[in-house]
Image 1: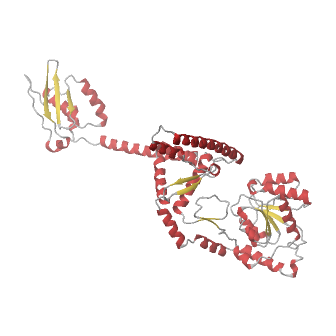
Image 2: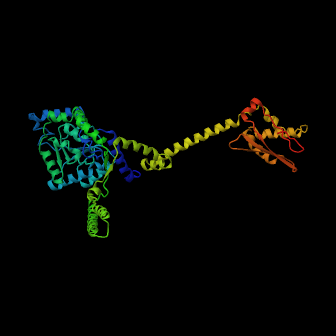
Length: 514
């Protein structure tokens, strides 16, 4: 709930994980049943975790002690030994620290079992837990973190009240050292329930009974079979066995996926999580559906008895009225399922394409902020802005390169700029002006050239056609007369090779050179 858009991200991530498991996994191995269901037809619960050899060595040492005469009088593990109970783990309220305090307080009040429990470990809730234990009057010191293997010869009973674990490794380590273990009856502890020294409870009364038994008895010696079950060698064997897929199973799966009606069924979160509210909704919808079905049944009977409608229309109406949508409303609200008529591989391909489509543009930035937080969205925007700036710099560099290039006719710019020589004829000045307006100009002179066109009393205007390589030139001298004549323009890339060949146009009493 502390993460941004958790209400959207949680079911979305659940759907995504389910799709990926079905598309890419042949087998999904879960350490315990506490994990959600992603692909039930491929899932298998198996503990594939082991413990270090040092824990098994401590268990073997204790086994020899308990099977000897000295075991009955052992100061730690003997039946008459002083109580030595401990907890080890991260100091978080989610690890069941509050529940442990309540159970110990109940044992003290109901059975007069006041014992000391050493709390090993560190965490953000350590100080708060220590203060609460002192307030309740419990003997619970908090020594801090320690290696679990160092407690092999110091304590007899390990208590772990946590129900938030997938698989608690400290429980496996304590069993490997031959200790008593008291844990709640929970799917995360199903694997450990087979060991004789593991005592599970479902109520406060069972916890008190298990605690009293551990204080008055010695642990059962750890046999070689149980010790091997906790080793990494046995965990690897369980992993190999769980990951194997038989030939028959593989063939059946291939046939199911190749079927035209093949699809994927994905479990969704409950529509209504509150059981009482769900029951009210189910009852209301069921009554409404029953009444509506009665109405349809009566209407169907009336249609059949009617002599007005044609027989064919009667049959069609009765067939439609007799249809039923048999949906278990309670199951739908409790555990709805999404049915997709696509093979896992095709679904995976379409999802990837869909992701690429929606993550482009501004919509992708919004989704990144929703899915990954504000920082991810800002980072994506920053990268886009940097790419845009880089493209702008490249365009400016290209434009500056073109504008700084020399004229196609070297030295011609200086000649055309000089139009104030009084010795030149009017025709020569007109030719210079025409060339200056039509030849490529420098970028720095483009604005001046545009102003020069507007200020000249005798002007030339050129209009280009879209599909022909011809231009129409019009000019005027003073205010007395004008002339228009179509002429052929010379391509710019031919100027440096053949030169600009002007054309004489005759109109009434004058012949300007253009």
